[in-house]
Length: 241
Image 1 (cartoon, rainbow, N blue to C red):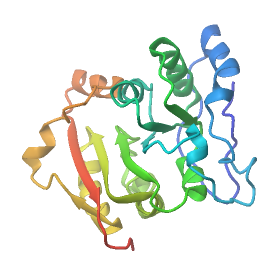
Image 2 (image 1 turned 90 degrees about the horizontal axis):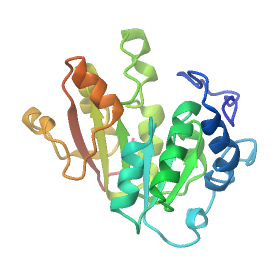
Image 3 (image 1 turned 45 degrees about the vertical axis):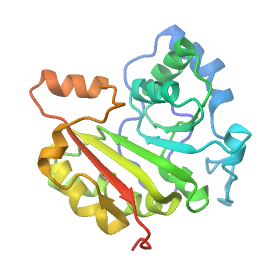
Image 4 (image 1 turned 180 degrees about the vertical axis):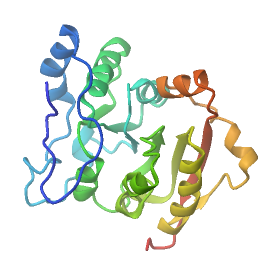
């Protein structure tokens, strides 16, 4: 089972698309459940002219919209869906094994306020209107530890500028990572993109959010002796760079 969307021409994509062989039940979920939950007219195959979409069409009403970028196994996303049933959640994840895991969790939890874009979040940014999202999560993103690969991280203008455009003024952007250098780059890059840091003191980075659910990636970091960091930003009124 490959990704539902191939890499877009003219835009580099770095990262895993597929991991271990999927179990039969996961293949069934992808085959039977993904079509009903996948966002329409977001991929370049369906929307080659990159025409703007109406976010109200995602859920058929005017739900507040929250976005999780790279949802991993989906446990945090499903947790937030249960806590906030009046919010419409969008999860973006190119790793097809993670999408399969999320579909299993959705089936078990029975949440209905979730839609999926199983590919690069930049495709979604291309077609969203300005100031349509009220919250965004970036949780344990790929650290790209080598210095020459730091430009591949999410916390670079290629991702942050379009994220700032689609977030409403006052929207919250949460970042969790166990990599100190990722914290450094986040603190350097996010504010110039149009955000105020609500956790400027390093002592604040040690405290998880009240509604936090520790993810599988965080549990791995803790087992391996790495410390989580929790950073919170707010979209400001200043136009992005």
